[in-house]
Image (cartoon, rainbow over all chains, first blue to last red; front, side, top):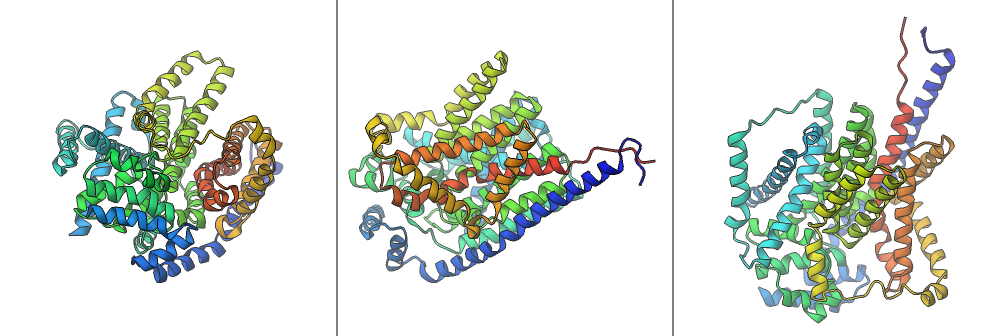
Length: 82
Length: 450
């Protein structure tokens, strides 16, 4: 390919830049896949444990490092309104 | 039936946002140049702001949350608009259509996974969703509830109400509490965040391929996906902050005041979402003001001040209300004194070490933050004018480090409970800067072929 305003050097630099950009995006995208597995695992874990009952909420509160009393205060308040 | 009611609630949020956007468009012509993606995202964000402030106002005026009062104003305004205007068919090419479909596909997947898990983790349940349920059951925002000394200590009654009131909107239209369905707000906010990101890059680059690839790279970051499911307010905040800052970027690039107005309205809505939003609203205002002062652009300083005053009307009423009734449970400024600083300097090393370990966690971010550092160094070596944007992000991180330094909670506990969520706030705009650097590197100067 012949360029009027460009040179072979600019062609090489341009190609090199494109390869760098595509490599960076490829690394970015592929580095995300191991973590995606964690996200999916977590959903299964949540589905298995947190299905809404008060007993299950204990696990949720434990997970939050908070006291179950905290949950009870809030839950009792809501029940008093219903 | 539930799904129809849910769709009605969502549609009305989009309609209210559309009407707010149209209203602004009357005064600022440039807004009509926003591309399709930016518009869709703006409708949703303005809509969340409009309906949450509507609920707050109706409660304060003691008018109640009757569905007629909630929906009729928007329906009448829409009819009035349609009577006087023809809806233009958006200019769409195949590339844009495919990009839009792809974003919807990613979001649909997330929607199913989000709605299939209940509200989990303490803040999601005990702070944000709890308030939504209590407000719905009370039919208003009762001061007695907000002032309850026990609840105040647990549920931070001074926190802004955009998220709980948006969930009240869903409950009100469903007619009952459904915590799982009310989480629909999160995937739609994730979708809007991606639309802001793609729309911002497309507005800048004018081509769709590379922006789409970079948007997918952001969309798949595991930590972002996780935060879209928890009922924490951090994803919503990230959406407002990144939308506001992308609009500020477009204002700097295209010099139109309309972008600045939308930017500050979105930043003001971030202050109406979480307290960190107020911090970044003030930080951004100050950063832009300093730059304008250095450049001696007097006219734009005046515009900035006017827009700051107008936009502060969105968050200031709630801020004054909480201060007036002493709703805050802790004094965040109590540690800001010389003695505390002198005896707690060790905290800096703990915070920075935690941040370092978090950002290098490949399972949460992939190698994104390494790429961020690499593009930052690239900009330093080229002495690029974009360095100022990177410095803005570094200043933002420094602010968060200071926030942890002065925290009134146990430092390790506080870091453990919130650092990953707070990182989400500046993730999208950092990814946007990385994308701009990569796009600039990608752009080829045009040669004449013989």
